[in-house]
Image (tube, rainbow, N blue to C red):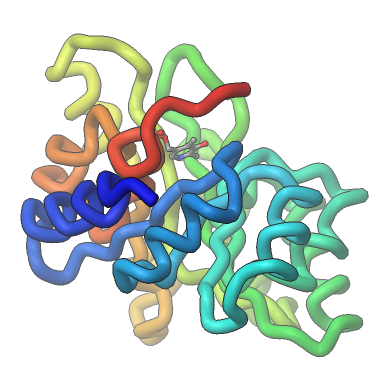
Length: 224
Ligand SMILES: *Cc1c(COP(=O)(O)O)cnc(C)c1O
């Protein structure tokens, strides 16, 4: 087996500021590639499709922490809740309610991140900053039985303009800090700001990200 995956992880970890968590985005890569990352010490992996998550979770070691990062339809929630520890891509009230009820039935606790949409193109998924602040209340949190809201996830516009990327990350961070101050001030679990992918994570961490989701720079290009 080639050593490039472990080398890529080693280099990334060396570059990342202390206190930043790496989610190795392994979607579309075969279990052997994940195994190589696992053997290099990586334990947190990100997947974006329910069936692929299930297959890999069954095949790979049980101490892997799986983050679900793709758009999730409510009819796939049960499958994802069975394997994921964290669902980063919560983009609607209906999805959050479904995750809570399925997690409750499965007797699992699931961490979630609320996805904020600020980028102009790319995915349209996610709450706008205004929707998010209207939606997240102390009553909402009190109503959740099996879900912990751990923070916020977002993506910057897919552009070369660094200023634009930076201002998108700032807008996402602003949402995180607002919620932290207004709703989660007494909740230390609400602590994750997940921003940054292979091409923009340096900018993301300079704008306060403490969790980056990196696929291509670890595993190479995906073949869809
Ligand atoms: C695929 C994906 C990533 C990783 O992207 P790379 O450019 O390969 O690092 C990160 N976050 C989300 C939400 C993704 O869907």
